[in-house]
Length: 415
Image (cartoon, rainbow, N blue to C red):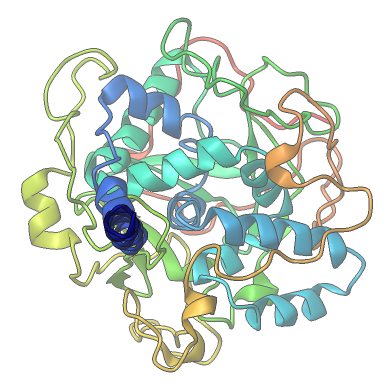
């Protein structure tokens, strides 16, 4: 009997040790699984992923790509914009500057409709962030390919709100008035032409701006004055894509997300595959990829970008050639000294308080609700076309203007 009890005690001790070791090894095992979880996307998959944002102005694309690596912060910021909608614009800008968010997320607080769209599409946004972090050059090429396709379909062209033009073989999009940004509105599953891409399952498409009928090409929300954000280091003029390097540039330097929730955290660009460097499904005819794996290694990963957003003046009082001051003295792409890990890690802090009766962003129904709400800082749109016959400052030389789109219109803003 005593021998049986001894054997039983020995077995219990072994099982306890095994259970303890299993618990201790879970973080390491899950970390390895997470590092292996990302599956590189082909051109068709990347086309579908970038379609909702590819026709936005360049600086806004750069902000979104980086912010999408912080889905929880984007959700928090969206909740915050609803809570502070009644504050004066300057007070909201000051509050945003003090939030423990990535600079790209702070920059998007100037564009409530964009934040709301991202927060209502958390699975898509998270996939976009993972794709950009792991395949940045491929994602940048996908944006350019989408612009080529939209131009061929007859919808992407210069309007009273934004300029569409060529530079070094790339299609660039910038506000006509550098101080007034109009966020485009379009159906991402139709604007590129029949059969180009399939809709992302469950994607929430916001209601059209007043006076705009869905399916008529590209419309625009009310103009956003970005002057209040210009003197912050994270404002509009601090962001731009480096199309050849295949990266986002922040204050003249490659910006590498520090989010801890992206797949393969710490291996930025580790899955670039060059999927747009050769013909195939999802690649427009005669498309020439600017960003290659070689150019990413040469210009992209951790190197100065040397690119500035179109029309950027730099924060007030600084010479044009001098990088803007960075928030809290943090160099772009490097961890902030002294900031608590909880503020730096995605999901390490509670979400911002949500207004009563408003569902969490991830739980919102994918098919409706959330009608358009007035955008803070919205500039009054002149009657008859939002932007009117404003002189085009910094207009590109005629030789570099994008050719007139073929076919149907829809580019002009309608009231």
